Image (tube, rainbow, N blue to C red; front, side):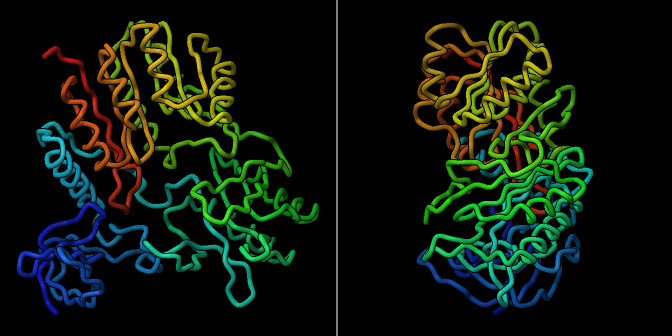
Length: 438
């Protein structure tokens, strides 16, 4: 069948219409004429599979990745990078306007990346078996189908190369992929590279990695830290197990970020794109006024943003649910001799309720997971007297849902998108809001 693509979808797919019914066709672009076939039929919409581009967009480029369609993670790789930024801005405007009645004119141009490829400083990839050999890869989009991927042009080059070296070493020691039946084998490889230093965590059913294997991995020049985490839970969204077993090297990854000398444990979150994280944090810091009494950062992670904001207030309080991250945050404050910060472990919403009852809060910075702010957090924000909110979001849909509620008490003054995830439809967004009396 032949059709013309009319618009871009929020997940990066092209959208055509047949008898007013939308058809989502991945790897297509607006104004393209394509040949396709229906892959899945729903009552109100359909999914199509691209067969041939009959009239390409002038913004179509040849993807550099050999596995991009099979993998499915980089839905914009066929789009010229400047056009990717235009699409991201447009999708953000449409989502916020449709679900939160936000004026599209409030959305700034997307802050683009100087390195649209080889930008990821971390990876979390599952192991699998191919021809009785341990391999690494990904699961196809919306499926449990394992796809072997030896090379990824989104990962930093050296990170990707070290990944292959580690898999080669594990094969030399006859390690196999995890099997639920006997709860044994290797499940995932987690790696992070900062300032050319690599932290490695291997997740598996049980720790049976020999000293010789450990020594060979640690012999890789950039590897400075190695852990094993036992995880035998059949169905879990948490890659790491409860226990982290330190196998070699230093226990923490130490690095410099802007003016902060920081430390990270394996389970602690840090932004995946270091260069764009610097630009993102600049946007947040610039959005916060000077000479404040109290700033609170919810979902603070290792406290990087709180530490960067320390010069803006007499007191900065960070809240995070992961104990290891708070340990890192406290250590980071001590190492940088920043004495006006306080970090606490707990649910962001519950702790904010307690804090707001005790003291006035000038600015609240929130950077929640993709699921957005929960009801406890939203209710507290609406009932409190917090003057300003800086909302950092990685999901326009949940951002719009939350803004629809918050706008009853807060006015949006600025929206700045940042491209943290080039080649994908994802965009990070910073929203500055101020309380208004109605």
